[in-house]
Length: 254
Image (cartoon, rainbow, N blue to C red; front, side, top):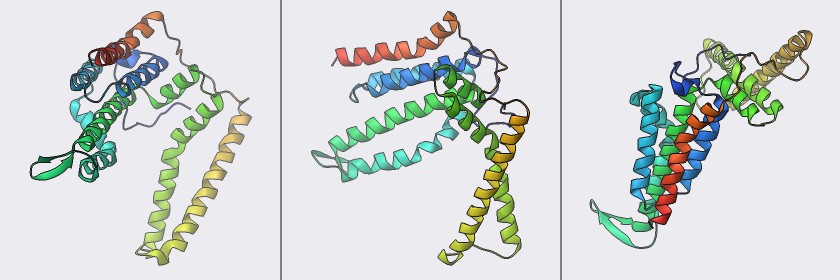
């Protein structure tokens, strides 16, 4: 069940961040996100501090800035939504580069962009320093239901198998002259989706029977010690604690 295939987000390493137990990093990222969300949008200096904290983590973990920036493309829908807010927003308006923009809309756009970007970067650093399988095991150590962890682990493990089946089905269709130009080809695509579902279901049944024949009783064996020491928790707590102090100061200095 180990994630033997290479994951695009994970960067192998032996830094202190990589070696932290996954449950510690999950709690640290969640607490950091809470501190960021709780910060008033007008405290620009606080967001600069958060960005500096993440930059320090990236340097310690040896995660290049280019690696992070390329994976921030997932944020594009939020950026487009935020850019539109000042244009369609109401309330007081001001001129910026010849455009009439809503002042409350600009603050709302900044709030979305700043907090979403910090959350995305924190998630990227988490994924870059934690193997997907280890992350799921860490979630289980945090009392996430084991059945959900197993479902997610199997989904992760067999995602490449399903994608490969989709690719082979697409090649088979195209080799027979099929080209999806408009809705008239929808029935063919629907039948392909149904066939893919059946194949996936049958694959799951075969895997389940194979597991039962090898003694599976509802729990997956854990071959790696994921226990966390007080030192591990203390090191992981540095990021959220500094973020929490910044959030408190942002409110007290209002």
